[in-house]
Image (cartoon, rainbow, N blue to C red; front, top):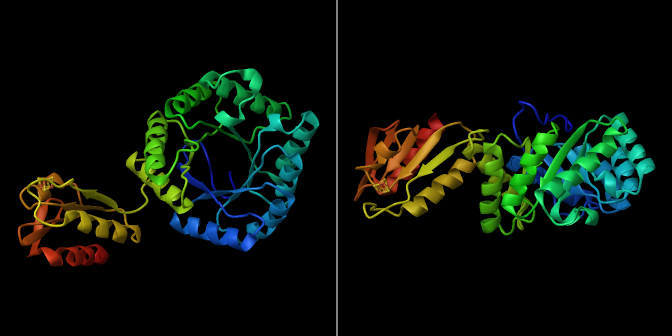
Amino acid sequence: MVGGVPVGGDNPITVESMTNTDTSNASETLKQINDLAAAGCEIIRVAVPDMAAAKSLKEIKKFATIPVVADIHFDYRLALASIESRADMIRINPGNIGGTERVRQVANAAKQAGIPIRIGVNGGSLEKELGDLTAEALCESTMRHVKMLEDESFYNIILAIKASNVPLTLEANQLLCQKSNYPLHIGITEAGTPYRGTIKSAAGIGALLAMGIGDTVRVSLTGDPVEEVRVAKEILQAMGLRRFGLELISCPTCGRCEADLIDMAQKVEEFCQQIDAKITVAVMGCVVNGPGEAKEADFGIACGRETGVIFEKGKIVEKLPNDRLLNALIARILAE
Ligand code: SF4
């Protein structure tokens, strides 16, 4: 359990993100957490680079509506302070905090608080003695950290191996699954700007999910974290693992299309983001093929030369001028 959110087993795969505010500024960080929660984020991670951030976490935790994970590098005192501030999970690599005694203190504090520890290994944090950046080395590094916690009889663990290279991430996670049964947080790290990062994340996370690997997902984008949440939800929805709301189908258009379908599809997509109904909506470019091509849609529009149609499950239910189709479609969806 990360706060009130179950992770692993048959539980729904969760959507995570990370704030990019200064954690020591509690109000600014809380505002971003609220925005992310409203967008569908289910677990949020905040960076804890210093004691001011660890203390601020206490204030953040009082008001945050989703579980908050403290992300700590190297400093076990920050881990202890974050647990004291009631973090719902800490992310720290026990092999990097300076010895068994410190690991014991952190493991005991987490055990007493009843919170998990996430071990997160990525290409940049690989120990030098493990040599080149390979799937085996990433996996070996992760299992070393795991052993340090298990030696303290601590088993409330979530694991993550990430690289910015998709095939390497896939191979390392497959290997890890053969060696461990702990829940996995998955993602492609430093995936890039929203365009490239979305594609890399969809390829990497999608492939892992298709293999049945992954319990919680974070998309990493160089951009607004709200975009990360939207992309993660779309990946889970596309893989048929979660259903978050309206599913939109739109045709790519071709020489038969006689309307500005790109603009129409964008408007329907904007509308869809505000609706939380598990229905499928289609926006198609021509009356001849559109209703048939999208017959699995609950509602759809297909444009004609001047007059288009509204269809439901492939059956035409109304004929209207093209410029009235959009509003009529929205009215039908809202009436549902
Ligand atoms: Fe072309 Fe019509 Fe198919 Fe769209 S629905 S791709 S316009 S044939």
